[in-house]
Length: 328
Image 1 (spheres, helix red, strand yellow):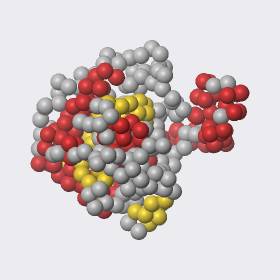
Image 2 (image 1 turned 30 degrees about the vertical axis):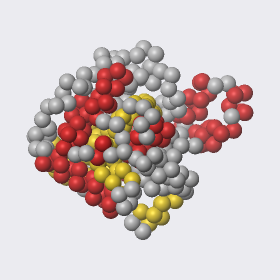
Image 3 (image 1 turned 90 degrees about the vertical axis):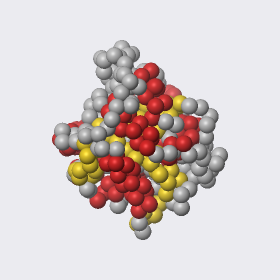
Image 4 (image 1 turned 45 degrees about the horizontal axis):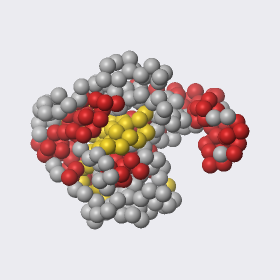
């Protein structure tokens, strides 16, 4: 079991929580996580580090546990945006061992970090679900203050709307998991592997029609976000997190409303996962009486990782949230 270095009684995030906790606590400068519905960005936010999910196919998945064939993506967690850019230069590039690997050379991300962000256009969602449904007021305040820093640095901020993206969390692609598991493990192994049985059962229960409808909804969400990204260079929003939740919490109270604990992060992180677009989480403040870090999420166009890193680097040069260290 892994715990948050900010408070060992609380959760470090979801399935890559160990990666986030290891970097935040100083065990290493870099760790790799896998992001299906936010499992790089969620622990990055909970642990106060930088987490990057690149464009789908930009980082090889060869050797990676990828039970969601159309969304799983590996990504780096680091203390700073600069470290993340270094990691991304090493991780990106074509790999013939991964069928979805994009046939492009490795990205060049370090050279453009210092470029000005003046004139870049940032979209700030006006949709209430982005703000009121899954995060507290103090988390919202931290993210809005972070966006104001971009304005001070010369970026142009305007309101955008992404109503369909609310459905990303509920858009199940469960049928993909049994396919991957049966392709990689024998039936005898799966029969004895009782922990995986619920995942197999959920996937087997999804009908072909349900799966196709989910893919149709996914394409509608992607078209919505792609349309917004024709008008702005990046979308700024909170990173989905579960800060302050006990590691075994089943429910959380958000603005007086009781919601399921762990799944609530995916409502904010699922958009980038379902669309395959790149997204980065950057520490932007603290909440819950200043005890837990808050993450700012930036979502960009396909293959525009360099711009997101440039925005994140500019923000970290103007603030000091990324140098705060947990007590553990």
